[in-house]
Length: 375
Ligand code: NAD
Ligand code: GLY
Image (cartoon, rainbow, N blue to C red):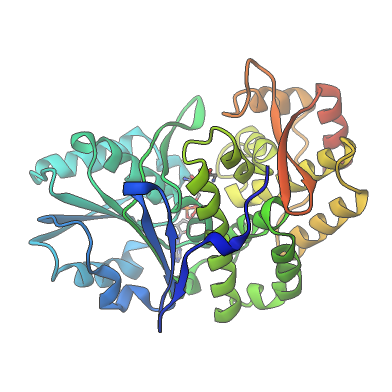
């Protein structure tokens, strides 16, 4: 499985924003990328006609960006309301979801309501799911404010909340009507969160674009310094690749699974340590080292690939040694992964630089992979 050539992406550069279209028939939508987009009136025109806009955010992001978003929306809607949730993965749950529904119902929001997700992946996933469910579906706009959300979670329509028995287990596919990636908002992102986002940027190289992997290696110092030009390229290329993949396989019947490179190991790390210990992107970064090792041990990739990827991930400020949870606990968590079939754990592996596939692996092989990279 591999992503097709980038030439098929319709990308256009305007004076401020670059636009990438995600092609899904009548559910197609633009991803706008640029500095200062929240302040640009053009970002907010031509959204679905509605009477009420509801901005969903959290207590960290709202003080930074809610007022500018509400101001931008005011000319377009009779009412602009807000729901400000507590911050953190632990609040991506039924309680927060109900808080959104309570507000929508208490304010008599009807079907002519548009939700705006202003925040990272937690707010984006939860708001998207609220939009999928409320009155059997209302439109929503993604306004991602973390690097991870701009390059991954805001694009592609996967929405969900967590259940105590599994992450992202209650959800729906519901595409946004627009994604608005203002690169300026990344300036306030803490370093650790920024590095976590870089893990998802790095991911796109081995799975779909060997040249992009080389570009990231070369420009990592600029990316770490949040250089605007480097950041713009990284976000744009990541979104292009994601748009291509989702455009071909919206509901993950095949190709889309490659976007989960490193995630099977990563989810086990996140869950095994307890959510919040390691950030999602940190677990994915380390998970990619393990998945690279597995690709090598399956005879698909040379050992030098594992070293190359591990060095890049480490330079991005991410952990590369897996926590010692014990093989049994890793296997237990990996068996509840959404890619598992009939109890068989399946991994995204790299078959050649820029091309990914799926493979099952024996428990013994998983043990060898972990032993090679455990702290
Ligand atoms: P997050 O949403 O928790 O945000 C990280 C932290 O940064 C939070 O404390 C947040 O309040 C803060 N923050 C956000 N923007 C900020 C800004 N501009 N300045 C300062 N602080 C800011 O985490 P995340 O990494 O963005 O997202 C992780 C979530 O995304 C997970 O729940 C994961 O399951 C989900 N996810 C979903 C998909 C998908 O396809 N739907 C893909 C990948 C990840
Ligand atoms: N983040 C994986 C996907 O969107 O499919």
